Length: 423
RNA sequence: GGAGAGGUGCCUGAGUGGCCGAAAGGACUUGUUUGCUAAACAAGCGUACCCUAACGGGUACCCGGGGUUCGAAUCCCCGUCUCUCCGCCA
Image (cartoon, rainbow, N blue to C red):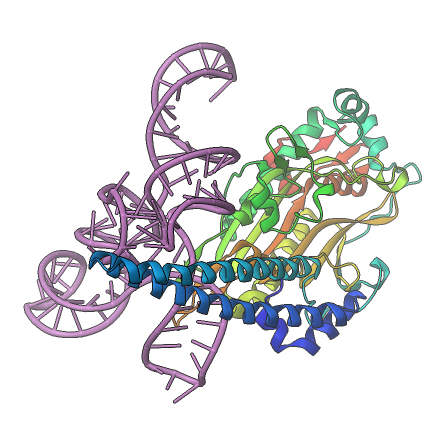
């Protein structure tokens, strides 16, 4: 959620930047400002009315004590009018405030100046590319065939137990996945991220805090019996650790890492692009997350990007980094870098990480603040990224590391798997 | 699932209708002092919104929402969350 004072003072900039998302925000911004002015006027009126009523009440109390009941009773008549007035003002104020809020919920974050304008993923900007794309033999298989060949992931079994998009990992498939999680967590911990285990179900307030609610409940599984939501990413519970916090400046930055399963309904297409591990309803992910001082958050974003790079370098997977264009940018993000690994057998890039700076957009919803050196409270910046999403890394390893003899496990993982080959 | 208790500021915790934005202690900040660590003493110390150039002032907030009352942290109703005991269970 954008901050109203910021909108007020940077009207043109907000509109120009939102245009990068192909949004004409002119009307909305004008309305925000009008509603806000209205709100403030009503607030002032209400405050004055209440102030008067408070003064009278005190007088009445004194009069009763000194036995001057007649005068007190007369004053009471006045308070009745004030009460009626304040009730009306309050209703108006609430109505305006909720209109303003509803409108603010609909406005996405203001893109960073470096965000390219654009509509679709074709307009994303490739900013970095590294790693060797192997030349595979004619017999090379896509990962779902390999999974079957080596019997390490069983999609049909998942269909039986739950439904499409819930695979069963078996034997070396399960072990490789566990190895990856362990390796990622070690790597993140070594880089200063504190490991946390968080709930996999969250309440409404948490879903709201990170921006999934109220508008995007469709992407989450809803446990209606208890009104809880299965998390679509660790970002939700982990960021909400800081909801309603007023930190000290020196407590910043906070850096966390968390492994969780992620649940996404993503009702949508079926077919080649979502085959195998490409898109699942349940998958594992290790997340990194930071709460930063506003002056440092873009440096932090760079550090997070560098960190994810180092993981992919160690895994020796071919990957590229994209700066997302306005049209592809998530609702809550100001700047996002996507990491994609090349899926050789499918001949396409698969997103495996998304690293974003949300600036104060989430913090405003979360009421996540810190006290600055002037003693004023200020919203902190939140950032997060995947390090990494497991299934597509797995797909990348299976496809890129396939040989005649089997799948060669990246060296860095061997201490974790205990085996070199899946065969 | 059954029964009960309770949600007060960063924390502990007092407060049962006006003198309460809220005692006291701790934590924290600043200052004084003692050779350091530390202790003692003194002062300060909630959040949000509104008005003001500023000094300052106003309003709201004691889990949330409604009600009673001239006046509510305090009384009433609904919701919600937490805790304890019993049952069940990893």
